[in-house]
Image 1 (cartoon, rainbow, N blue to C red):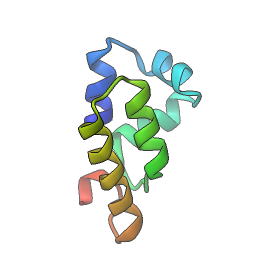
Image 2: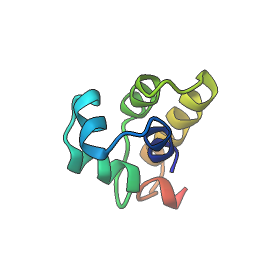
Image 3: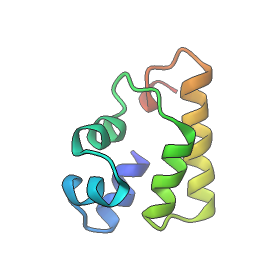
Image 4: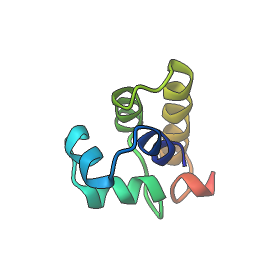
Length: 79
């Protein structure tokens, strides 16, 4: 998963990343795993930006997140 990879590239634990992103570790872990989770495009793009991702990666995540909202997909893994 892209968000998990971005976090790992920064060497951050779930707890440290959740603190930086202004969320809790349970929510971050759920979104990273994307099990039955529709993802808000703004959240995905914003978190990628905060991890220092390139514009290409940010746009890719935003597009993937939009697709989870526009279809019957149950998270990232289903699309």
